[in-house]
Length: 464
Image 1 (cartoon, helix red, strand yellow):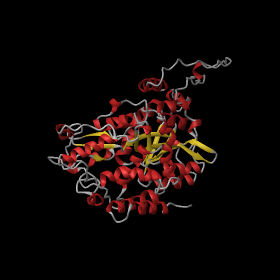
Image 2 (cartoon, helix red, strand yellow; image 1 turned 120 degrees about the vertical axis):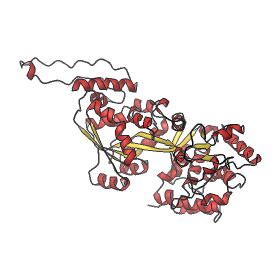
Image 3 (cartoon, one colour; image 1 turned 90 degrees about the vertical axis):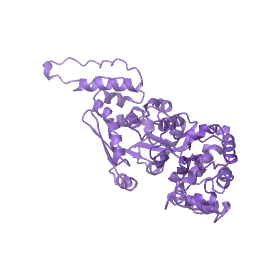
Image 4 (tube, one colour; image 1 turned 90 degrees about the horizontal axis):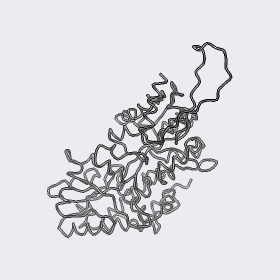
């Protein structure tokens, strides 16, 4: 059986293209013992470490066969199936059984388990805010002691490393590795009509505004915008603000804004808003005009883009929005998308999005092997090919993606100069999912002015 695992391990290593494995170094010979050959204990072969760490090499050599690594996270239903299927090859190659338990009440249940001393070996956090709380309590293992730093620097852009670094009781630690990503900095458009009209994909924000004015001058409405979402009304506007913040100020200021150290009523946030209101508050630019924005369901907002002729031409949203498009619409034919253009060249081409970060809570060799594996694109390759996942790893391949939308989003993420999480998801819930949504919606509806809206959000920030 061990020989089978070794053969599978070799295949896995080759598929990852991580390194050319060197012949195993013979173990130091022990003094001869006169024991019948059939009774002599089998010595584990010494294997060279992989770029991620020694334990991953040991795992592929079958040293941890029969062990179990527990995981918990938010994946349920179809997502849980795709995750399980994506790790089958690793389990078969190593003999490690990764037992994943998903829950729709993940945020509440995982806190109870960790605080109660019953933490799973590895936990998948869909948002880093909850993880940072556990890091601050000293409950999370520093992956700087588990995964080779040179590999991390090689396989992730710096932004992923920055977002994975969190403050523990004794200083900053590498809190986790990123397994999945999604992007929000996208503008969708009706491709056939767009091309027929002779419109060009904009490369800069100035180009975007020229295109906006050109469509309006042609007698059409450039933008499809809606932020209604029941109790969550307003979140779509916060995404616009976050995207523009990344394009008009530094990452340091963005992070300070998330932490409550840069006020909403600051020149930086006001500047970002000015770019947005130049579009949103011009009735010639928005389908239905400004007044329709707070009452248009976000999922319905892009629908007029598919009228014949289009009633609006551009819709900024994350890649998930395609599930709200009319049935039968084909990517690359009926619609396409472009990257929301940069504004200030000094801030490059940032991407706003989200992702899953895997943290380690129990330190055993087989757990180290699994977390090292999650730092490679091969750990998510099966999910990428099945659809529903984008790899943030530099060793991923674009030809893994089955459709042009996710392939294009993956390319944007991999080529990004920087990446940051949705700010409202990282802020305290009372602000990020509360006053930020509410008062921005009130501002767009015209019931309060900008200064009042921003000050109300600042006043709501928790003081504890």
